[in-house]
Image (cartoon, rainbow, N blue to C red):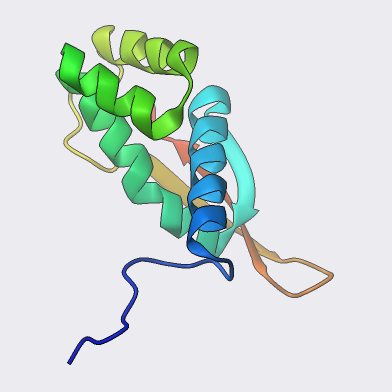
Length: 122
């Protein structure tokens, strides 16, 4: 049975805080092309980043509105959609992010990684 089973990763917080963390991390990744975070958070935001880039590759109005609703930043969405229109991810059918491990953090021994957008052709 699946009573009281939560879907997705909670990241140690309640649902609204998890949503806010993921939203800010996705915005930071799309704005900077590379961020340093914990492995759990990187794995949690990977599907959201792939979803936004897939919407950007579609490029229609409904996809743009979905991306603005997901990210909350129209200027960032316009930038991502422009990159997709220029053909940055045209030859790629997924796998838009790369996670590289850096090692354990000194304070709490959490696994720290760099998650970045993949810009090279396949």
